[in-house]
Length: 256
Image 1 (tube, rainbow, N blue to C red):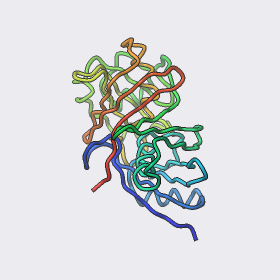
Image 2: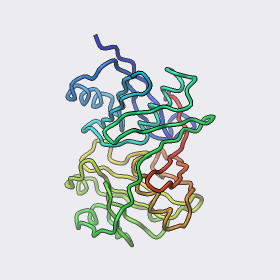
Image 3: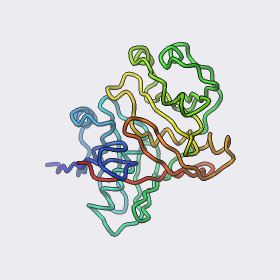
Image 4: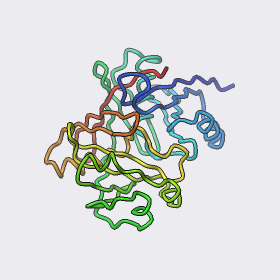
């Protein structure tokens, strides 16, 4: 019989009710994908991570309530938090084997750092339906896994109220729409929207920063930056551009 233990963790948060919540499920062996998807749907959190401990690493898969993801930052960080705090408290580094390759997470005091692949976006046109759904025309548009809409300032990012009914007509599986600008008190800010998802605006999107970090690093001529995702819950990310890789750091806490 497969043992099953679940934790609920807020990533990119220093206190409960902030950051991005994830369920972390520790299992002994892989269940059918359909069953994993049903568990994620029942959890109804932005992401559910399933991890299996092996000799010196962990296997990891990520699911939203609707689909399996190719990469997820906050649920990886939440998984590492569970490993460091509840499974192997003496570890300072954990290796996850995933669909997107090997991912290492380190911990230094309370700060966890993801080592993720860099995804430099390229200049792109904007589909008319995205422009209609977002409502305010960006000054620039780029594309990697996600569409990246660049605006003049943080105030515009805060003001945007996308039309979910229009956005849901778009199929970007598994991508989304990032809106971003230079920040008032941090280097850059962003928000993230997922078409056809029950959780439309993601609170804090680690994987989006695989593209945002190299983009803003080049634009600002800085390798180390502080970012903030200005969703309702919000979260702070400490970022570093390492060329082919990006470092994304933040805090986690157990959910209430």
